[in-house]
Length: 71
Image 1 (cartoon, rainbow, N blue to C red):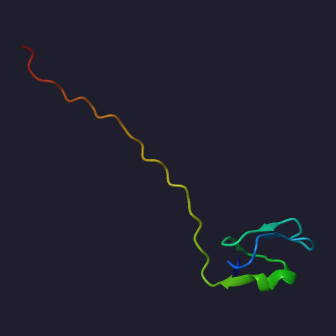
Image 2 (spheres, rainbow, N blue to C red):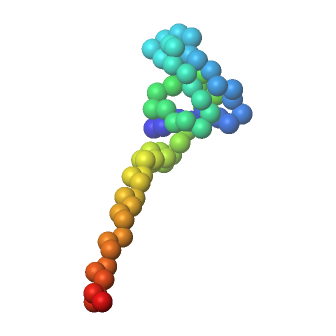
Image 3 (cartoon, rainbow, N blue to C red):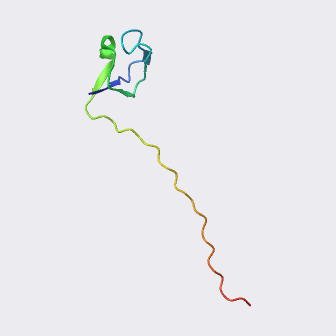
């Protein structure tokens, strides 16, 4: 199950336990949370898919069309 820090909760850094030193930000999803701070989080039923950076579309110069008829 995933968890998200509630929007009303301020960002914080875990002080002790296995998550000590980890920073938690509102809106981000976590698979593990500090047990003592569980009330600051809400359960996320369906994890938000991670956004992948879209590759920029390669722009190719237009090919010059053959010019017909030499005068």
